[in-house]
Image (cartoon, rainbow, N blue to C red; front, side, top):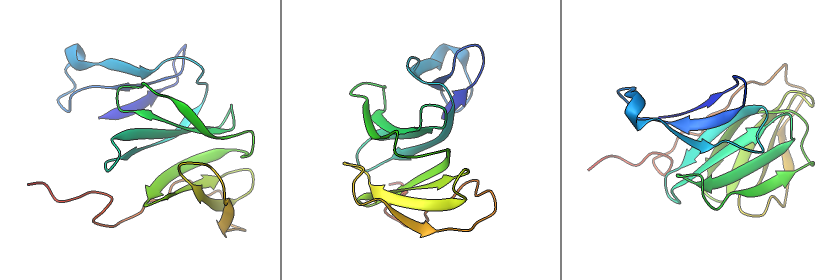
Length: 134
C-alpha cells in the first residue's frame, strides 16, 4: 500500500496492507512538496507520482531508488495520474484538461480532453494494468 503524507514534510510512504507500523517505510522523503497523484507500474515495478507544487511528474523504483523527473516545469497543476503501455495520462486543474505523454521521455505531450470542470482523477482499466494473480 502506498500513500502520500502532507504533514510537516511531504513524503510518499508504504506499509503492509494490515497497516502494521513495523512495515512502514518512506519511499520518497526529499524534494517533494505536493504529491497529488500516485500510481504503480506493475510491468516495470516502478512508482510514479505528480507534484503540483513543483510542476513535475516523476518515477522511481518501488523502493524509491533511481528517481527521475519525466516532466518538469512543463505542466501546471497535475492532480490525477495513470499509466498504460508507453504513455502516462494526467489531469490538470489549472488547464481543466487531460494530457498524455510518453512515460519514459515526457515527449509527444498532447491534450486528450479539454474544457473539463475540475478534472480530479482518471483510471485506465485493462488486463495489462493489473494482471490476474496466479
